Length: 186
Image (cartoon, rainbow, N blue to C red):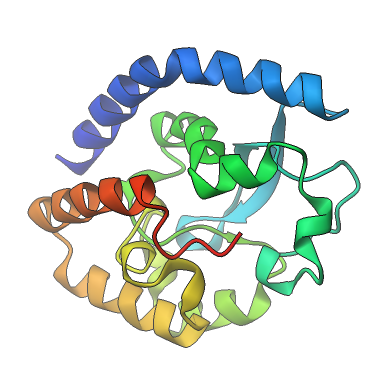
C-alpha cells in the first residue's frame, strides 16, 4: 500500500508542479552558471548510497557539507536559492527517487554521506532499515531546529508507529509546514 501511495502521489504532484519545474529550471540557468540539478550522494535504506537530485540552490564549488555545518552558508546561495529552499521547491526533483524506489513520500530524510554522526546514531537505533522520505516525522516536528539526537528519537518513534494512516497524517501536516515555511533555517 505504501509503495502504491508513493507512486500515485509522486506522479500527481509531479504533474501538478510541471509548469513550476520548467520555470524554476529556466530561472536557475538565467541567474547562476552551472547545472540546473545538484546530485548528491545520500544514505538510504540499509545504509546504501544513492544519488538524490535537488534543484541547485548553491553556487558551483560550494563545500560538500550539510548546511548546518557550512560556515556562512548564505554566501553560497544562488540568487534564487534562498527562495527555493524556503518554499521547499528545491525538493521537487526528489520525486524521481520516489518513483525509482530509493525514497518514499514519508520516512527519515536521507543524510549526506559525510554526516557520520547522524549515520552512526541512525545505525545504532536501526533507523537505516527504513526507506528514506521526502518528508517525515522529524521534518514536521522541528526540521532544521532540532538536534540529531532529537531527530533520531523522532525517527525511532515514527518507525515504531509506522502505518498508512500515520504516513498520511505526516503528509497532510507537511503541506501547511511548507506553505508557512515552518522550521526552515535557510
